[in-house]
Image (tube, rainbow, N blue to C red; front, side, top):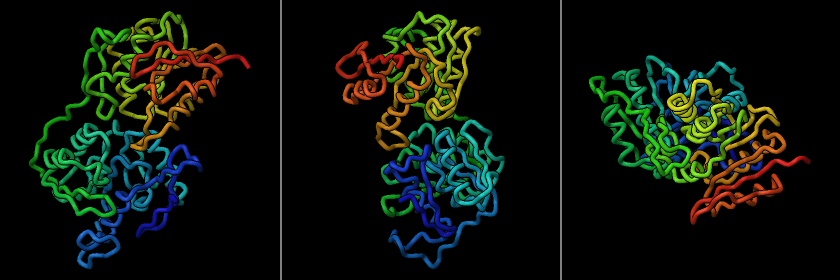
Length: 398
């Protein structure tokens, strides 16, 4: 059930893209705990359901910024206070847009921004949904710290499995003195008091590294990585394996790097064949920024490329692509699922021209060949090792 009951009302929330068969909820106990705290209903001694008579609601009359709201639960519940959402995720932004509208608010009731946009110049209440990536948290706290003042209320929230000593150390080092709440329903709050005299210095992101000789077609390329991008410290093994078997010699083909991350697959294809046209797609805004930087650091100026933050291949016309390169994730916002890969494969089939090819790398145990044969009617093993497999599926005329 996706109904979230709060002091501001009850909200029917969904993920994006909306799927009535999806059993995953669009809010968590961490979201509910934070909303109870804001309403002054934090409970006694960590006992859920009890209200501390001494607790007071948080003043939300100033500028409220919400960072990392997974599916818009916090932003929707607080929409009457005009919060600014700061998100790294296209899917989270679109879910928030839909949930705010479903709750009856006007489109301009909230401000939807990305982690790459300029944050508000002054923030009176900062709410942080602790992300999976410690690097992303570090980068965002660095970016937001200058907007805080001594009276800014800073509250983070997450499940107990998501909040570690390193998490608290980041708040302490960048924002100021930090403490945590007792756990409720396996969720915990983080309270940080801004120290105006604290100077944590600039964010260490983005970072870059040069791909070594074991990276096949990517050897010698400079990979640029913004905070929160998958394997930002070094190239992941799956991508490295696909680079060793990257299809080249495609001439003026239209190639899509789907789920592009830092963009090394598409960039390597562009360096090998400068006449290609590239489309880099990812639902992560930092990934798109990384792919842009990686491409510009390596590819010829004459190579055409566009960069799309979006939902799989929804923005690509059907029958317009010659080759799709894909290293699909098998988790979505911390939920392990094969649904994302299936949607990527289905979208690729629609986007490909007859005779067009989808090249996929994945762990052998994921058995992507079964999905590809069901969709395309064929699947060929290009290369394999004890852990990974590279598969090729061709769109046939039907």
